[in-house]
Length: 81
Image: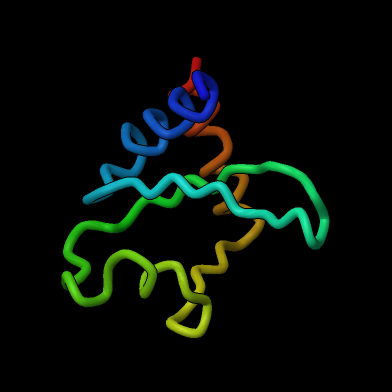
């Protein structure tokens, strides 16, 4: 949890989200494991489109280019220290 918190704080430092969702998703019925999703909600998202609505792929997915992904990873690495 300390690592999850450290990464979540880096997400907040880099992206300044309105809020940060931490989700532990998985199922013992499927591929039994634990992993975390750290999802920053961009500022200005209307309240009715927050929470689960913002996490549902049918409402849109941000697909960064490989260059954008590399930049994001670099910025997060620097924020994590």
